[in-house]
Amino acid sequence: MLGLLPDSERVRALAEIGVIFLLFEIGLELPLDRLQRLWRSAVIAGTSQVVLTLGLVAGGAMLFGWDAAPAVILGGLVAMSSTALVMRQLADRGQVDSPHGQLAVAILILQDLSIVPLLLLIPLLAAAGNSSVGDLALSSVQLVIALGVVLAVVRFVVPRVLARAARARSSDLFSLLAVLVVLGSAFFAEQLGLTLAVGAFLAGVAASTSPYAHQLFSEVVPLRGVLLGVFFTAVGMLFDPHVLVDHTAFVAVYLVVTVGLKGLIVTLASVLLLRQSLRIGVMAGLALAQTGEFTFVLAEAARQAGLIQEWHHQAVIAGSILSLIATPFLIQIAPRVGDWASGERTLDDDNALPALKESASGPADPREAGRVLVIGFGIAGQTTARLFRSLGIEYVVVEANALGAENARKHGEPVVFGDAARPQVLQRLDVAGARLVIVAISDPLATRRIVSRIRTISQTVPVLARTRYVLEVDPLETAGATAVVAEEFEGSIELVSRTLQLFGTPDTSIQKFTDALREGGYGAIRSGLGIELDPWLTEILQEVNAQWLEVPASFTSAISLADLAVRATTGATILAVNRGGTSTANPPPSFELRRGDRLLVLGDATLLAKLEALLASRAADH
Image 1 (tube, helix red, strand yellow):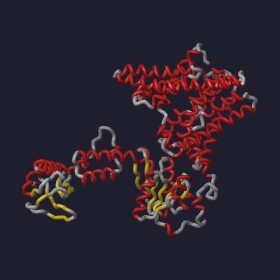
Image 2 (image 1 turned 180 degrees about the vertical axis):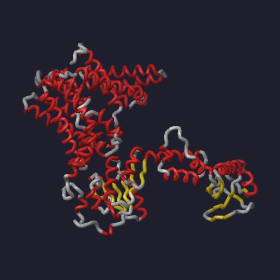
Image 3 (image 1 turned 90 degrees about the vertical axis):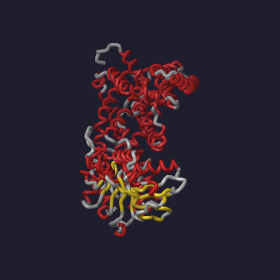
Image 4 (image 1 turned 30 degrees about the vertical axis):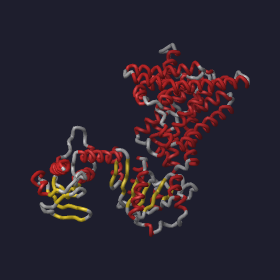
């Protein structure tokens, strides 16, 4: 240490508090819904990464003379990544929903879940060195019993405590009990021979099933930044910079193994087991190529148990800090590294484009020219494909997920497996002769790259790109997209449309208004705060339009247009009446309206609203 704070135990206590709240929040916020969606990737890639990293590092350490217990702990330290940092970096770049982002999230979830068995393993490893087989078995039974007691207590006690506090209707009392639940569960677990972190995690999982979990979440989560700051600050205060000088070789090997081995394992697991593209595997591997907060937690628990020496603990802290510093740069260069790695493969590779290899080696079949090319077969791609199939429009889909492409082909979809970011694939599919290219993938970086490479091949083919985020519209248009559909924009327009419907605005006016917003490149929506809509847009809503209205079913008897006095009362003009599929144009005053009739009315929003009110009132009178 630097000597600025001589009492290191106080610093360790500060870090321990941060760990307790961090693990409680992880348990409380455990994304079970996301785990259900990503369970296959989490189980296959996540388990492979944790088990292989732990096994290889432990085996390598034992080859260099380490005992088995410290070697296993070292493997567990390297296997963990930083959930907080990786999620923040992916979110800032808009890559959480991208294929490599989803893969990284799945592995992070598995790592978060594996922290509990690793923490439970520490006391067993500590006892194994000085105990007989019988004593070790007894310790294991005691540990299982203690774990069961803690689970039972937090499962049945914590929700009831929260319920009592909620019924008291005191926000201060609920906040106080939230803190007591976190600390009390942790210390209760410690008294039974478990660790503070395990108790806090189990309490969080138990509380997440309570009806009051959302309120508890709102009490604890605002502390997230503070607690992480406390935790990492305490770790930094415990760091001894002399370790970098005295044990440079160990720190360097730790850093290289962490980045290289984890990146390689994630890449191989994604390509060989999940059959993802090499580019996605490389990008996910680089995103997870660090050790993070759980490494510090495990290292401290192992140090206290006597499984690793003090200098080992300090060296792990040093290597982990360096890996955390390198992470933003690794994620930044990940797309280029992924392109470089995947670019070394050719179309003759056994894993590349099996569906395309089945065709002739010559150019694409001329009969397929003029078809629509859909890139990506997620929800958007599937919906578009259904439309084309219904209209009888020929199309072909390119999907980078081999399993997804194989499953789609089993259902008769014209889907080929390939990475559309590669020019060879686009040329093979004759993108220049396509009627339309639709890019419907969720990776913003890959979308931009695909659009740019399409434009390199053809300057005239229409390209319709879909993106989730506002910030991607301008880059995609610059890259050459003919039109960009932004989900954020379309959601805003749909919200405006539904609002105008509730205010009685005619459907035709709403349609013209929303069309004008889209034709303007969403400029009205993208304007800064305090800037009103252009007056010509609001004038659209006041235009006179023809609108269909239906006579209410509450009409019990017929009533003539003369008796209604539509023109005199509302100012609207009835152009036609449709009854049972037969239309009567310019109905005379004697024409009698009946329930279920559809009226074609000419007027603005105000006049149409008056007519609707008139029909409703006369129906009530009858």
